[in-house]
Length: 298
Image (cartoon, rainbow, N blue to C red; front, side, top):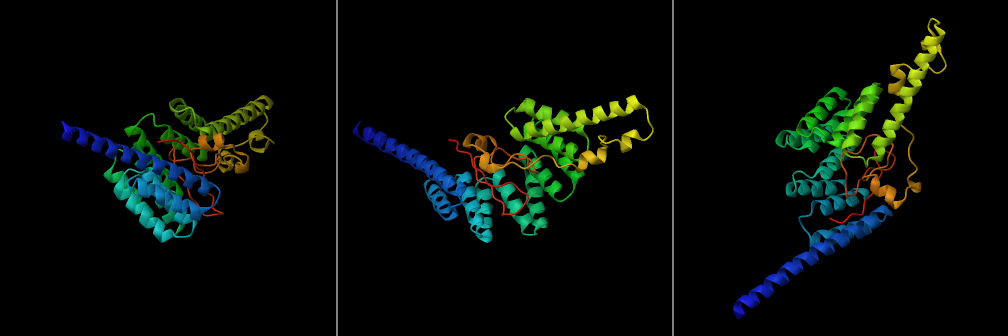
């Protein structure tokens, strides 16, 4: 009976110790995120490393460490960390996206494509693999391929809100506002809390209204060539050329707004490819999303 009691106590202490280490890892990660958001990447890197020491197999902590390393200019080291992260969690979408983005910015598009094609081929059941493939195809100017990848994603998960939103954006950019609005609405029906999609739906809806008003105005006047030359008439190519929306001043975003951004600034291209609890990275001066973090418990 005594041996059983001692064994039970040891087991309880082991479980308690493991739980405490995991909890401490979460605290260190949150601390690192705070430093990261303030631009103190050296301290962020240190805190993320401490989080990993407490929870070595947590992919988010390793991903965040890589993002801090990139911010410090250590691209080779960050790439090694990201590839190791994918060996721990072969479905970790934030790391796939960040690594492909980094490879693209280093003028290594073939390697980025090899990375994401390999993911989509080995895990065709993962909706996120097709979404990321579509993102890369759009970056490379292959809109047709992007649309096909998004349709593959919807075959796996017909109501996936991110795939639906991205397919809406493909139609939006192609000057097909009716189809774009339909996909945006389906995306929001699946997941309402998507500020970026709400904003794009409002944009495309207002432009549809302007276009219809222009057509009604031109029809009522029955004058030749009025639609082509009228002051408010917009043809399909004009819709495609318009900017999607004005950039958002991130200094005016509250913490709640930042959390609801899913790690990105609303209103920029591209739409987020995933809802994240991790840090995002892009070099200063690029058109890609600026780093934002969400503070959520695991």
